[in-house]
Image 1 (cartoon, rainbow, N blue to C red):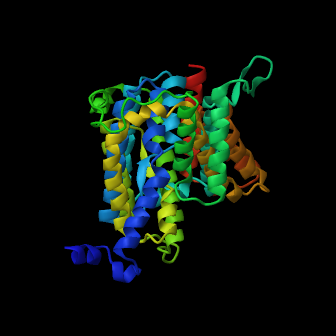
Image 2: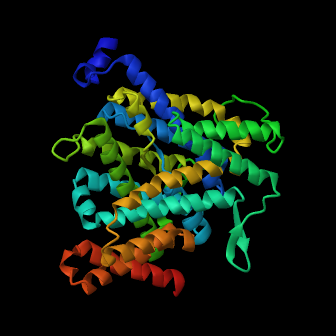
Image 3: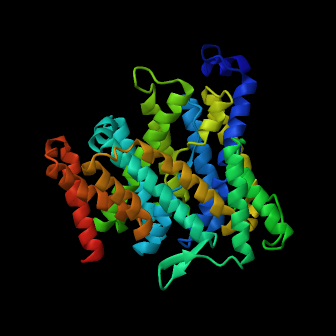
Length: 437
């Protein structure tokens, strides 16, 4: 049996072993286990049941990992993506006042579109249509937005009547809990400690419990929380997606998830040495695995699933086959039984994780051609627009509207794809309906 599995995952060809693959899978899980607690916290802001979101997160993550490992045979793990879950909760539900049930329906529809464009191999067309600079700006902008949320949740920045925002009160003990978590996590990241974000959350929680800033949990292990509050809710509200505003929300779910996943997959494939002639083998199966997990996740009750850059931790310790992802998926299933720990994972515990992930996402900004103003201006508007408008979609809209204009002004209008011109009108209509109509 073990020989058949090792043959299926091509251990000999990849020069790997059972021990190395299982260790890599465990390392990846430790590196991204924080999402089990951060995702319910973020989606809980949208009035979703945290227990149900916890279970949906674990199941959707496990499914995505198992599919990625078994079908695509890549050591790449998946889970509900940070950034897009913030868009779901803060931009769509809180900002646009869209019920979370309708937002879930939007994720469901976006996942169906994702599957269709994967089946018909339209991914290259869509990827080529949006300039790489704008893709990097979207990733970096989401990073700033996530960091902004973390700073706000942790009490490091607060509303200020005179200056709009300002430094939070350092007399609040909970703020110092956030500061401790941020410093500890930063040190662990710099020292390249495996699972630094997760370890930082654990240490911050321990300090909170020791200082009684966080109440002790009533238990550690229990049965998985019920999915009933969110299960199949998306299907019941598909008919609510009936306006241009909600159509743009679906488009944004699709674009952000698609490009975030595609970029992450290519980056991780490069790290593991899988790229051949600048192409990623089996990329169709990888995207199909991811989009299927996104579809099932929406039915279970969570925001879009995407490939996780934390998979690089497992790859770094030698993970090369799909067994790495399978191991991570199995560990997510075991994680189902630790839901009582949700009670001790306060905003001050998750805030440092959000800030650090924001830093990681902002690294993409170095890829933008800042010396070309026709590129730099729309990229900057995307980057700065997301945190300052408190909306990922508004930030994307600002950049996508300005991009064709600056390119035409630079006499480079012919370089703009027809799809980008179409998106110009889509986002103009979106902004008009959202802010005028």
